[in-house]
Image 1 (cartoon, rainbow, N blue to C red):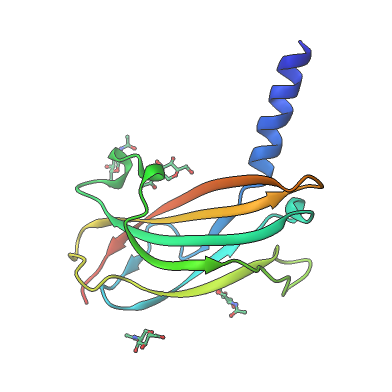
Image 2 (image 1 turned 60 degrees about the vertical axis):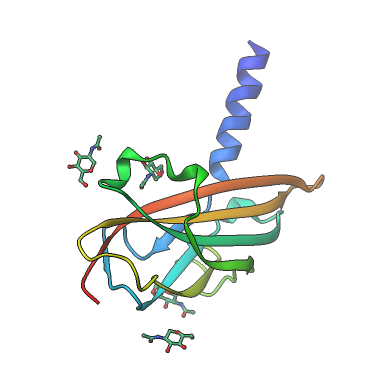
Amino acid sequence: MLHLFILAFLVASAFAQRCQIAAPAEWSTVAPGSNITVEVDRPMTLSSSQEVAVVIGFWACNGPCNETDVTQIMGNVVYSGPYSPQLVDAGFKPPYQNFTVTVPSHFVPGREVSLNVAHFTLIGAGLEPFLETLNITLNIGSA
Ligand SMILES: *[C@@H]1O[C@H](CO)[C@@H](O)[C@H](O)[C@H]1NC(C)=O
Ligand SMILES: *[C@@H]1O[C@H](CO)[C@@H](O)[C@H](O)[C@H]1NC(C)=O
Ligand SMILES: *[C@@H]1O[C@H](CO)[C@@H](O)[C@H](O)[C@H]1NC(C)=O
Ligand SMILES: *[C@@H]1O[C@H](CO)[C@@H](O)[C@H](O)[C@H]1NC(C)=O
């Protein structure tokens, strides 16, 4: 019983830590070769964490993206570096950081693409290493 409780707590706290891809919106259409803003929001509950890095990648899916497990893939890496979210609109938005990235120019219009984010942080007093992956599906429009 106690184990179950601890497990539930661990799962709950792991989910509470999850960042979010706040922009672009899922199913947005993006043009090959264009620059887009990727907004990565960090939940307030992570305030005791020490941020390390994010990696942002695009994976061109072979058919509908929901048929691929994209959590093990980054694809074309368009950003790999520090993550330092800032609290800009206190009360309206959690801390976030915008990244301007370029959609790979060889992507074929009409295809689905998965926008993948890997986020690495150190949590709590013990600075526990924590890695999560996030993803949304976008459509490729014409260039
Ligand atoms: C995208 O951004 C890069 C680097 O900031 C810039 O060199 C390039 O001209 C931009 N491309 C477009 C289509 O705006
Ligand atoms: C997967 O996505 C396609 C559209 O791209 C949709 O038609 C299909 O119902 C989805 N399948 C599942 C299992 O969600
Ligand atoms: C970050 O990007 C979002 C979405 O495009 C935008 O609403 C917001 O104003 C941007 N923030 C800054 C500080 O540029
Ligand atoms: C993305 O992540 C969600 C979980 O948030 C998952 O349900 C979905 O199938 C994933 N794949 C794509 C391509 O969006």
